[in-house]
Every structure is written in C-alpha cells, then in structure tokens.
Amino acid sequence: MGKKETVPQVRFKGFDGEWVQADAGFIFDTRDDRRHPELPVLAATQELGMVQRSKIHYDISYDKKNAVTYKRVMPGQFVIQGVFAHSDTEGITSPAYTVMDFKDKETHDDYFWKYVFASDRFIKRLETVTYGIRDGRSIHYADFKELNFAFPKREEQEKIGRFLRELNCLISRRQEKYEKVRHLKKAMLEKMFPEDGADVPELRFKGFTEAWKRRKLGDCFDERQECSANGELISVTIQSGIKKFSELGRHDHSSEDKSHYKKVEIGDIAYNTMRMWQGASGYSPYSGILSPAYTVIVPRPGINSLFFSYVFKRPAMIHQFQLHSQGITSDTWNLKYPVFSEIVCAMPDDKEQEQIAEYFAQLDRLIDLYRLELEKLQNLKKALLDKMVV
Image (cartoon, rainbow, N blue to C red; front, side):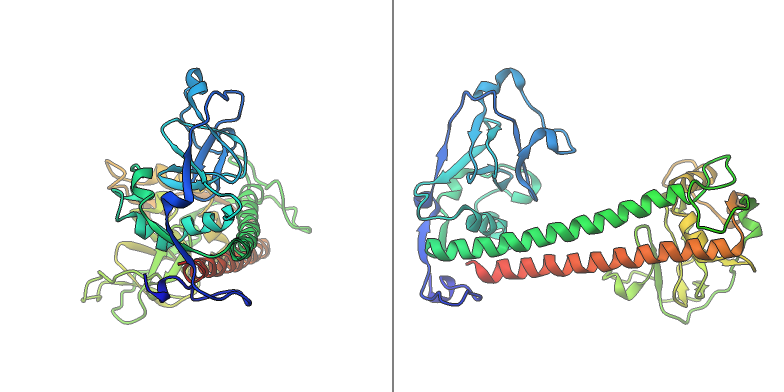
C-alpha cells in the first residue's frame, strides 16, 4: 500500500505518521467458549450490534434445547453474522456464527474497530471476498482474516472511537426526539377526532363545545376538472404528502404530452385514485400539474382543506377509503370522485378546523426539523467514517 492508503484524510491534532498495516488474522482470533446456557441469548443487528433477543421487536430463532452449544460473547468482542456486530454485553449466540476477539487487547480499541466495520469502505471491501454482505449470505472468517488493514496506535484509536461514539449518541438522541414527535402526531390523530359513532373528540381546544356535524365529502369538496400542460410537475407521496417532483430525486417517466394533466392550485387536495386506500393524498402548498392518475378536489366555502388533509391520514378514514374503493383486486382498486363524494365524515365549524389544522402543521414542521437534523448528522457520520479510517 502507498502512503495515501495508510494515512486518513481527517486526523486529530497531535497525531502524525503512517498507520501500521497487518492482515486481519494477525489482529483477530476466533473464540469458541460454550456451555453457558444461563446467559441471555444475543442477536446480531446492523444498527445496535449485539442485543438481547428479548429486547428486539422481531423474532430471532432460538434452539433452547441446545443452548449449551451456543457460543459465549463478551463485551468488546465481535460476532460475524451477515454483519460485523460489536457487543457491549455478555451473552450467548448461535453456534453458526463466528465470535471474534483481539489477539492483543492492549494494542486495540474495540470501538475504533466497531466503526471501521461500519464504514462503507469496509463493507465494499467485503463484497470482494464474500457472496454479498447485504443480502444475508455468509461471511467466512477464513476469507476475512486475509484482508489487510491499516490502523494507528492505541491512543489514536481510542480518540477516534470515542469521538464517533459520542457522535453516535447525538444521532440516537435526535432519533428519539424525531420518533417522539411522530408518535405524538399519531396519538393526536386519534384523540383530536371523534371515534366512529361519536360526535365529539376525546381532546379539543378550549372554547369549543359544539358537537361535530356529519357531512358527505361531496358537500365539502368539488372535483377540479381543469387540465393544463403548463406548470411545475408535482407528485403525491404517502409519507410526505405533495412534493415538487424535482425534489424527489426520481427519474421523470412522464409523457411528453401533458395536455391531459390535472391542474392543481394552492389549497387543493390531490390523491392517487389507485392508492387512496393506502393513504396517498395530500394538501398542496404549490400550484402545478399532476398525472391524470390523480384526483384533485377543491374545498368549498367554510372548508379548511389543510384540516381535511389530516382527516384523510387517519387510519379509520383510510379504512373507509379502502371499503369504498372499487376493483376486483388491490392492484385495480380505485376511488374516483363520484364514490369519494358519498363518504360521510364528521367535522367541526371552520374556526375549530383552522385551529386543529395549525396544530398539526406545527407538529409537521417540528418533525421535518428533527428529520433534517437527523439526516445531517447521519451524513456527517458517514463522511467522517470515510475520512477518519483507511
């Protein structure tokens, strides 16, 4: 290897010189310590490393009768099972997996190597000695031990490992905030709208006491029939509502002839006629044009379309859209405006509509803020992993 391959692009102050090179077989050795059935069973995960089987949400097969054959895993060791999983805890794992530890613990920091194994650079290298790390196939230690690595002295390893660990903790805290607000929104979509058969919600803003009225959606919205070939192309997404097509990073497969495209104005609601039963609808903050596969509806006076955009995202309402969709199979189900207009929905007066809409819009802005912060930190981590290890 040349000098560029043994010196990272980004380095902490006070460290210089080339990193040492050695094959993995000189750094690591396998461990085969069995007969510890009393220890908790660990599962290997991409994001969390080795975690107790009982603490993850998906099922991991466990042969309880043969627990004595399971391999013991100690803190600071690694398990090769489709991924290179670092362990912070003691436990046992399937005998089919490889447990790996340092030959000389005084020379190496396990957190430094944890992030080496998490880097895109390392994963790409594995593809040259395995049948594909990302598709769940086996990674053999016999192949791994032949790979050559460059690494610094223990002090620099610890500095890198500590920094990336702190960055990972920051990402985890941002992830928790993001998930917390998303869960709050989900809960409020249930509590701030009446349940089936009820005329008032469980929670509502101070000053509102009147019962909600039940009206057909056709009394609240008209279908926009206008077509136009001129305007910015927009799209409806299930998760994020209406977005400019140029912001989605997709290839444009739309027809050159857009004369039959639907016109959309700010404040309209558009939905995918074939996917309304999956929640593919959204309030439009833009003027633009949409594929003829979509239905565009315009609010009547006294109707707050932003409020209804949240109504349409409620699971109970999506279920109604599914029940009213027509077609033999789910691939052909569609909800055209004439049928959509007959669906009945509970709604409050315009002032309460406005307040509820603004509350959920604020939640969405907070969710977007946390999502962007999280993406920036994740991108920073990815970039630093590429530049701080070789």
